Image (cartoon, rainbow, N blue to C red; front, side):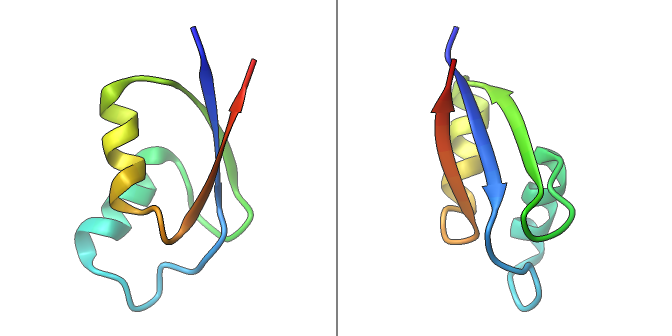
Amino acid sequence: MARLQVTQKRSKIGVKPNQRQTLRSLGLKRINDVVVKDDRPEIRGMIKTVTHLVAVEEVE
């Protein structure tokens, strides 16, 4: 199964509360935090919500 490396690139200051909660649910707390998640539709949806705040790479 493919995995996604998600890196927070921008601050959550000034964004909507649901986007802050999404970042927290992904496990991102501060800029340059990195998490690796399974490539699932739920995770893809969460990433889509905060695309302007994160960078995503596919890893093996």
